[in-house]
Amino acid sequence: MVYINVKKAKLDKGLTDNDLKNLTGFSRVHLNAVINGRLDSIRVKKSLCLALNKSFDELWEPIKAQETISC
Image (cartoon, rainbow, N blue to C red; front, side, top):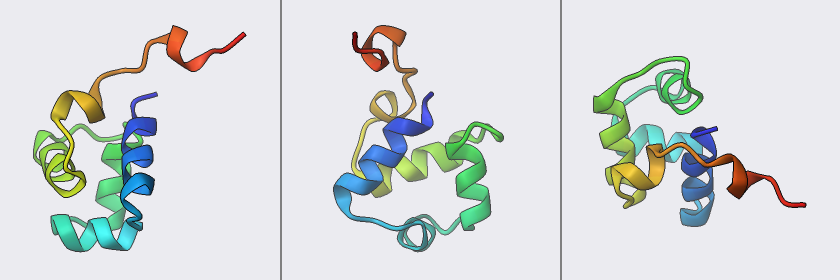
């Protein structure tokens, strides 16, 4: 699940949804739709990268199953 990368970066920076809304200029509903994969917008994804100071690949690269499952 790709959104985990974004949510982790948001928590690491101590930002709320309202903070991201103010930093990017997009509504919380629009941001959450992109973060949760219901909407695909390169413009929003790039804005989130800038706001979170992360590369595009860091935020939007799918997590491999091996990394998410620990036995």
